[in-house]
Length: 189
Length: 178
View 1 (cartoon, each protein chain N blue to C red):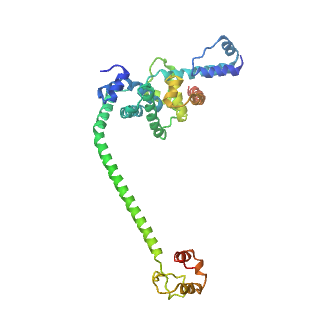
View 2 (cartoon, one colour; view 1 turned 90 degrees about the vertical axis):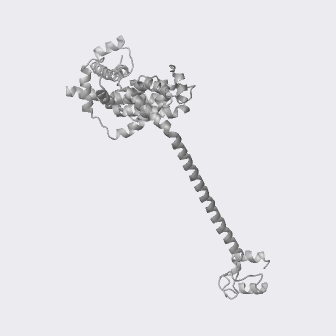
View 3 (tube, each protein chain N blue to C red; view 1 turned 90 degrees about the horizontal axis):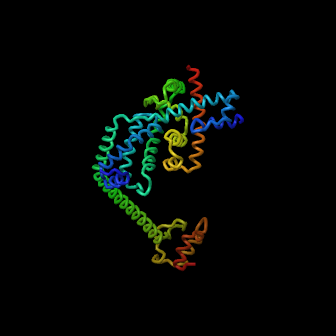
C-alpha cells in the first residue's frame, strides 16, 4: 500500500480502490471540519464530504499531478459545500438571542474544553450567516481554518486583492456582529 | 497615543496576534472609552478562539469511508453500461436529426425548383382582356400568335401598363419582344 500522497494519487488514477480508501481515511476529518465550518450543520457537512470524495474519484484524471493536491481537493469540497449552503440558507435562521445564550455559556467554560458540534454550529452560523458567500468563505478559510492568503487564493480562485477586500469587509461585519452578541449576552446576564 | 490608533489596534486584535505595547497600555489606563472597546475586543477574541480551536469531530468515520467506497464501486460498475447506452442514444439521435435535416432540404429544394419551373412556363390566356391575369395556358412560342398581336393585347390592357411589370418585361425580353 503506498504511503506517499503522490504515489496514492498515481494509484487512484489507475483505478485502485484501496489507494482511494487510504486517501479518504487520511483527509475525511479535515474535509469534514472545513465543510462543517462552511455549512454549520453536521449532516450536511457529512453529505458534502461524501459527495466531494465521489467527485474527486470521478475527476482525478483532470488533476494535474505537477500541482498540489490539497488545494484542488479543497476547491471541490468548497464548491460542493457552497452549493449545499445556498439550498440550506433558505431554511435556516439563527436568532441573535440564541447565539448570545450559547456564547454566554461558552464563555464561562475553559477555552480548552471542547465545544460539542451542535453548540459550535450555532456559534459559526451566528457570526458567519450574515456574510455574503465570498466574504464568508474567505473569512472561514483565513480566520477560522487559519490558512495563509496564498492557500485561500488557490482554493477560492480569487486574486490577492479580492481576498484582501473580502476579508476586510467580512471582519468588519463579524466584529459588529460579535459586539452585538456580547451586548445581548450582557443583557441576558 | 490617540483613540483612533488605539481602536484600530484593538479591532485587529480580535482576528490577529497583536502586541499590546506600553504606550497602548498607558492609553487604556487613562481612556475609559478605549478601555471598554478593549474589554469587548478581548471577549470577541475569546469567542473566535473557541470557534478556531473547537474541532468538529466526524462521528463514525469508518461508516463514511465505507459509504464513499461503496458509492464509487457502484459508479465504476455502472459507468460502462451507462456510457454504452448514452453512446447509442446519441448515435441514434444524430442519425434521426441528419435524416430530418436531409428530408427538409429535399422538400425545400423540390418546392423551389417546382416554383422555378412553374414560373418559367407561365403562359398568358389570349381570351382575357386584362393581360395582368396571367394564366399558365398560353405558350408564347407555340400559340400561333404574332409578337405584334401580343404587344397590342398587352398595350390595350385596362389599368396599369402591364409592361411595367418586371416579370412580364423579363419574359418578353427573353423572347426578344420589344
